[in-house]
Image 1 (cartoon, rainbow, N blue to C red):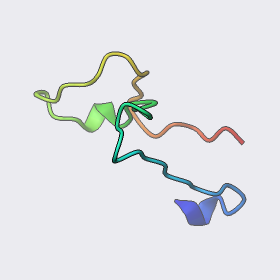
Image 2 (image 1 turned 180 degrees about the horizontal axis):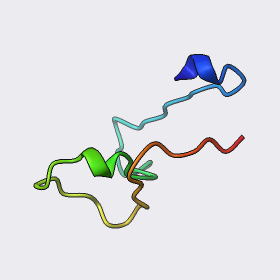
Image 3 (image 1 turned 30 degrees about the vertical axis):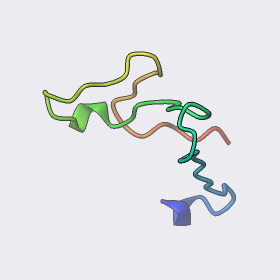
Length: 54
């Protein structure tokens, strides 16, 4: 996927030592989830990949 958009750098950030610092921003690929999967209702949900902003 990164090859198709070389002008958009992909940066994944996390806070393993303090998970309360940065939480999930979205839940993606919900259409492929098992029926038993539980999703956090707070962040927005998307059935597939989120469109790029730029």
